[in-house]
Length: 482
Image 1 (cartoon, rainbow, N blue to C red):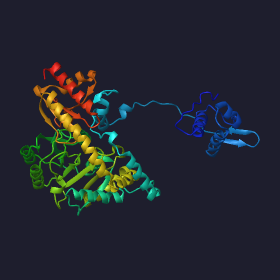
Image 2: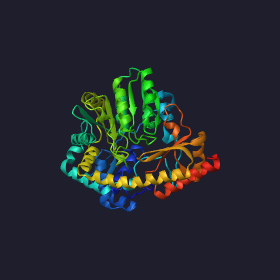
Image 3: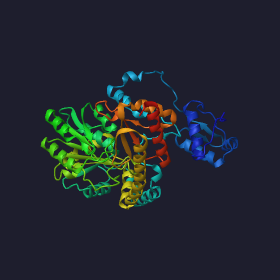
Image 4: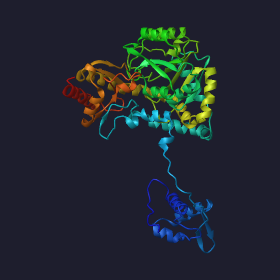
């Protein structure tokens, strides 16, 4: 007995011994009133210190799993280990339709597989090699020293007040009038959108958006039972004439738009179109959900104000964003900027669902932002991503014969191939050569786009970008006469 005890290096030894004995007792391998080896015997048997055994025994005694008899040693306490009759349910029969739909649209499960060593253009997450870890540590230690007892406790559903105030100022700098607006902190963009869809009245059950659009948003729209009308994209944004035609023919509950570095096309909607769109939506009294995706990753050209800024004192724009695609995705901190009355109700929905976003994560992020580290980080990140962006554009134009390449900045490019070449088949041909990318049709509202693909370059080294694009281009020419 006890010869199956194996030590690992990543945990205190006394805890490993305590957990091992606890498992033996609760599983019935050690019986009630059975005598345990003495501390001296156990330390010799396992080649560990006697104090380690004594500490483990003390903890087990405090938990009521063993008891000590003076002069005799330690014995196993009475522990209920009875088990009821085992049954096996068919959980597939108990899963609802919404869950089946979520599983069907799960690209992590049903998308292309990835193996170590492959060149993957599927991600548009930030490059972790750029993460400002040292300054993040400083921010963490500073905030913990100031109010560690507070940030480790429950927080407020609305969010951490200093972060809310910082973000309100941050949005003002973008040109947004925040006088009648407020902020709710969320677990990233996705929770923010889900909260909104769960809270807004579904009068018509129909929304309007760009086509193609953000896959995660599409999933949520479908899971919430919305019909989706997508309007095709031009080089400077959505086709306004077709948008106007759809608005005149159907009634919608809201619009969903990504005006800057649109996902997946990378297109930046021009100021002229932003103004026309805002005027159009205002005339139809339509709420707008604006996805503030990657706004900071502008490599050239002048600043473009968000749609929320065009709205002025109006309250029909709901702005959702996060730093996930720029800074630290692992923090899962996002925000909704909207009319104060709407935030008032969303706060209650947030409290009912997840209580609050991690106060510790919010507080450390606030400290990092407030200490000015973000400004330094984003300068460095933009310089690196700009170089990767320009490299990807150059080699795509040189090696990939196509109808159109879009992407005015950000972390990805979108490509439309000639002759309706099926990118699923292209992907299958590239996979054995060690290159994967995102097929485009998963972003479309109408199942079109089978001739498109998205190339995310953010996490790749420069030589990988060049090599991967060459492989895609050569495969196109060899296999498809591209």
